[in-house]
Image (cartoon, rainbow, N blue to C red):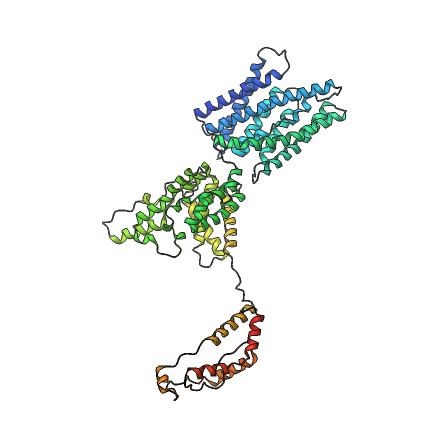
Length: 594
């Protein structure tokens, strides 16, 4: 019996999203007709404007419905759709201004005797069609940029029926803009994106010249220069408007995240002072998540900045976290398990309050609770269960919710990577001898534990992603906890230390005479002399004295004689020096010892 594959079901679309899509398409079609319709040739047939509006409306609405059901990351809020609409209207306004200037430039050249085969279309390559794609890629992401590229190219096809190159030109340059800004690491990324747009525009300019049958040099020069100018103009327009759109819409771009990643933020400075152990933990996590996110195609900058700020709530009670105790007493020893778990859980709430107080981006604030998800504080939970078992059958059962974080679970890939790095970095510090094999085993064990607990069910991490994450975690931790060779001290430093110690021994006064010695006067001291060393040790000492260039104090093959008083002992010590004082001072001066 053959089993028929079940067709994939299309997720339902809410009425609100459908209504918002209708309003978006209606607004786009109305504005396009208002600004671009009058620029078309006069004498159109009746209802031509209505037909153009209908084509634009149906195209934009269908594209919106398709993106909702097909693109997993295209789940726009009302704010996002308003931003998309504003960018489309902004781009249509630029097209309107550009076409007016193109017509004016063409008429000026024509009045001066120059003929251009492409007409005013030769100057339209300078219109920054792709500037809107750069804006949406910077603030909303790739899927919104793709929506913009397809929508604007179809609108241009409706309102430019005589210019065959217009639709593929707008579509290709807009898609290239999205791809060029996918890795946003500096402000110079806008310049690189503009150059890429210019590079892609040149073949379309050549195609337009060929299709028009142009022969004069000006027919080729003007479209080529306009294509180059259009790409550069796109970069300048996008770079200037992105901060405005970011501030008005409350978005966070990679540029703002890079500014926060410089460690100059007041919260990070305070964290390094109040909770230095947590600060070090966050810095190591930043390296881990940056490498892992880059490997799986997630936003590495967002993950790294989220790692820096994920535990800022520990500043409120730093000494209740083991990384900040510095070997002092553990304050949890005097608390009940439930109270300790409450304090540990509170750092999430405190972190959210601090983040909102300092107006951190919403994407960073969301990572503070999500990096713990709904996981259990295992140490105190197991300790509470053990205490309940020891207290007998009358003990109430341990409430698991008191030892669990409030959640939610990680909603993004960056938050999921942050959750894995948090537990793995802490566990790596407990390995006594962190060899690469032990680190790899620990990383795999921790990832399997988090995966089996279901904490990653609501983010888009796949098994292949987890494999890449584990590989990069092992690489970073192995480089941090590497082994080093114990180097021997320099020879000059060793000789200097020996000479310095022997100089101190030479300057050290001999022990004062005992009371019995003073009473005896000039008689012999009743203090017994030290025992004679063995013959082998005495011979060795004499051999070392003869071969060494350093100072030897009070070294002799015969046992010390009984001294009558302290002055006689000092004279004997001075006479027992094996080297003259001048040579000793010369050696010390040569070695730089005063």
